[in-house]
Structure formats: C-alpha cells, structure tokens
Length: 274
Image (cartoon, rainbow, N blue to C red; front, side):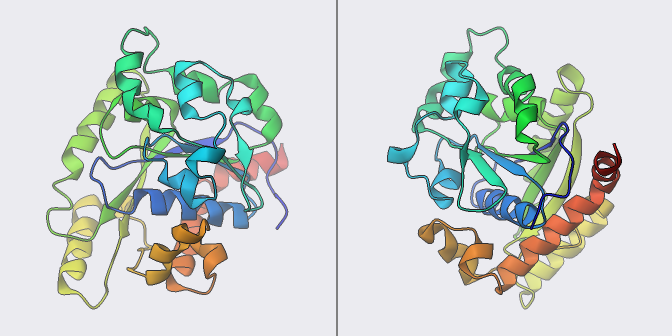
C-alpha cells in the first residue's frame, strides 16, 4: 500500500509497562507492522536491552551493526543505525545487550534524559518521511524508559488481563507525571490496550470491565486475544500480519492500528493538505 501521508515530524509513541510479560514487545512489533500496512511510514526504536523486537523482525545480535546503544552512549546519528525490515514501510533501529549498562554509563552526562529526544529531532530525520516512531521500552522504569518518555508525544500501555493488572499501573503513572513536570509537559497517554484477553475466561472479563470503569476512554476498544499465532510469529522473525494475516491476532492489531490512526486523524489530515 502506498504511503498516503506527507513528510512531516513523526508522531512518537512509547510502548511502556514496567511489568514484564504483558505483551509490550509483541504490541510494538505488530502495531508497527499494522501501521505500515495501512500506509504509515513507521520506525521502531528498540530500547530494550533484551532486543526481542530486533530479533522478532529478523535482526539477530550478530547482524546488528549500529544500535540504540551507539545512539545514546556514542551519540551516533540515528540515520546510521536505521535499517529496513522485510515489512514495506517499516524500519528499525535495533537494540544491543550493551544497553543493560546504559543507566550507569549515562549518569555522568548532564543531558542524560534528553539524548533520545535530541537524536529523534535531528533535522536529517525529516528525509525519511516518517509518520510514526514507536519505541519499545524496557520492562523497568529506568533511565532508558525516561529517555523514551521525554522523547515521546504519547505513551501506549499494554495491560495484561490478569489479577492486580491495574495496581501495576500506578508506578508508571507516577513516572509519567514526573516526566511531565520536569521535562515533557506535553506528554500524554495514548491509551491502554488490554492484552492476552481470553473472552471465555471470567477473570479476563472482570479485568476488562474494571479497566473500562476506572480508565474510561483511555482504554482502546480493541483488545488483543490470547492467540497461538502471536506466540509463534517471532520465532519466524515475522510480525503476525506476515506470519498468519488471517489470524485473530493479526486482525486485532489491524484494528488497534486503525484506532491509533483515528486518534491522530487531524494531524495526518493536515499533512495531506499542507
């Protein structure tokens, strides 16, 4: 599908939850692929030292040359680290295990919280014609996550449909509030997406009901089901849309992408008419 948007500053969204195993990387990969499928030129920034998003899109550690570690620590220009994926319209800046020590290495840098912000706003980035940048954050509220939040316009939170799910959001919300106060007052919540939902399971139904009652319109209409295809796709270095485009997982991420696009329709519409 051709890119229908004009070149302009991209919409930057962090995908974050300090709790592991909630479908954060799965959401980042498949939402990015679904946005690209809809014609949005998309860049995925892998900021997780585990590098699962990089592996899941076909870049094992041995094939990663420049990474987000080089961007943050060595101040390598972002353009030098971006590589195309097999998905048309989707590129990636891969991660490195070296990022696990980034918090310590960055402490002496006065600009430590703004390094990713400044890198993503390099004027040369405009030549890529990006519509969206999605940042896969580590499962912790580390300096890496702070860098992502300072650099972003919004935060998308994957929330697993399990007991105590909502309680786990409190610390992330406090971190977002602190980033708004100190560094990025325009940061907002893009939305909360319920993941690993089993419609036959009473607990999933209760968690969804509680989330919608507590968070209201912040919760996306789309929910992501438990789906074996979603689990299998990364082992084939593919998004679920490429692995099994007719699966329930693929359909769900297409629907989520449509919701994200709708929430930014005003901005995207202005690009088409500029």
